[in-house]
Amino acid sequence: MSIADLRRLLADEIDASEVRRLLDELAEQWQERGVRLVRLASGWRFQSAPEIGQFLDRLYPEKPPRYSRAALETLAIIAYRQPVTRGDIEDIRGVGVASQIIRTLEERGWIEVIGHKDVIGRPELLGTTRKFLDDLGLRSLAQLPPLMAEGEVDGSAPANGTADAVAQPADDDDEEELRQGEIGFSEPDGPGPALT
Image (cartoon, rainbow, N blue to C red):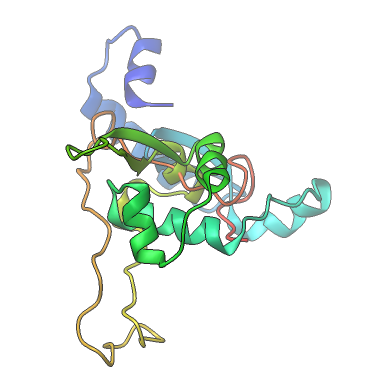
């Protein structure tokens, strides 16, 4: 739930900063329990702690959907370089992007058309959604891990120079902080993000 929704439930009697303070306090109280209150891109939610994931998997043995390497590469390019056109993605990957990959990512709710590039043909500009961040358990794109440069293995300095661009920084406020969002690799009600 967003802070705006919580304020509406309280008939707007408590201001946003007070609601945020109370949520932070509650999150701290729930930190050592099997269920935690966490802040995501689209608001706050209770979710299971990662350490109880193995037990929940026994109750709900469903496997999360698997995505092709091409789909994950496309998603990563959109997340780190947005807004991008399909042509930009093809230039970076060095191969064509199948329409089915874009459609799958849109149906999952991880990417969306956020505009059109002002060039001949007006190609669509793609970006991530809040659901992308929520599914990964992130508040903003700034929390994505930094990109490693070609030849870099363990986060140390790359052999060939500087690293590529990193995620865009995001404002730390709630409702207006992001238009971007979701890259979930696991279902939102699961024990937490699980890259498959």
